[in-house]
Amino acid sequence: MTIKIKRGHILELSISDMAFGGKGVAKIDGFTVFVDMGVPEDVVTARITKKKKNYAEARVVDLLSASPFRQPAPCPYSGICGGCKWQFLDYQKQLEYKRSHVQESLEHIGGMQGVNVLPTLGSLKQFAYRNKMEFSCSDKRWLLPEEMSRETVEPGFGIGLHVPGTFYKVLDIDACLLQPERGNEILDDVRAYIRSSPAPVYGLRSHKGYWRFLMLRHSVALDQWMVNIITAIEDQKTVAPLARLLVDKYPEITAVVNNITAKKSGVAIGEYEIHLAGKSTITERIGEFEFDISANSFFQTNTRGAKTLYDVAKRFAGLTGAENVVDLYCGTGTIAIYLSDMAKSVVGLEMVTDAVQDAKKNCEKNGVGNVRFITGDIRFTMDQIETVPEVMIIDPPRAGMHKDVVKKVLELAPAKIVYVSCNPATMARDLALIKDHYTVGDVQPVDMFPHTYHIESVAALIRK
Image 1 (cartoon, rainbow, N blue to C red):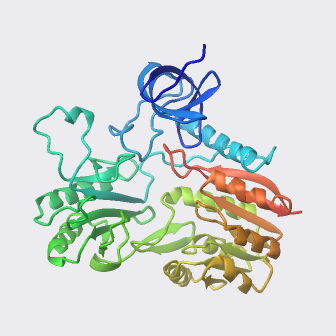
Image 2 (image 1 turned 90 degrees about the horizontal axis):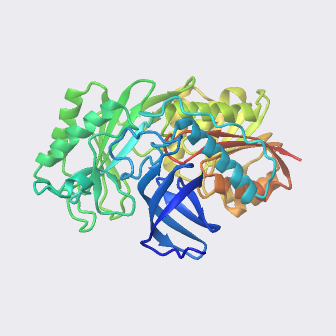
């Protein structure tokens, strides 16, 4: 008998696998159901939330029999907040599933069988590992289930993280376990200040108000904190007292800035920046190199994990000091600088002008003289590479390489490519485009984001 599956139905399901994207997989007469909050070997009742021709989506209602891989989530917001949805899954199993997701992407998307995907390198810390957090302000906060029945609960101001599927309400959180505890203390003080401020909180529907975001950055190496307060308009009389309060209370806060943006898009980047207290940057260290990080700089959000990732890239590159290296999508130059002590020369290509300016400053800071940068669209600036590199580093955004960039890579034909990826699907697609010309060697997954399904990977490729 075939079970008819409709939206709203509650079904008993046995979870058999974990899909890329973090959802459990169940089968009903061969039909696939992706179950949010499901763990392999769970038996659950789940409500169907979406029904498509080839699959359905569901959410756990009751846990009938718990998987041996299930563990209590330490965060009270687990299952509500969309930030780290795998807290209930044993960490070693997280690493295993991340490796399998990389392997499956290479096989099913890239059509590459037998690639040696190594066991995932775990994060040195599973909590308090993030060096950057962004918290949104809203005039409407998301009420927790236990708050719904309380008449005294006010559904107004909240500062925290978005609940999946909502854009105008935020979950007002006391603490995020992914950042160091000092960050939660700063968050609490900022919340109290905003609550007592006469300036209105920004409405994500009305697009009116003053307070928009709080961004916190932390230097692991030097234990420095940056506080970036994002507001809709410039008003130093309102925000400057908050900056003074924070630097007086916390000696670790060495930089406070105010980014101002009137744009309606929910992005915590200012159209311009005002320096409020301390410096305008904090300093982080990866290995022997130091990097100055400004409010809007890109920097890997797991500093300890970044060193692991860059060490793998360095090992796969196999540099002897004689190689010319090209680093595509070099950003602020962290990988280029990290490889510079083992290379003859490094050329970094990046289209974001501000990132290149940061990269040049970081070279000066570290006394690195064998790295230069080319600014502009990589599709066109690759023509400016004068010497065919022995090694090419490719670290593209989540969308992967543009097809024109792939063509240019094949024209340059470096002897060795080290591909660094934050998305197994686009990595598999890109490697499939060059597999006729390059042999894919080891692929090393590196976990930078514990308790999420996200995974970084480094692939070694040798020209045939």
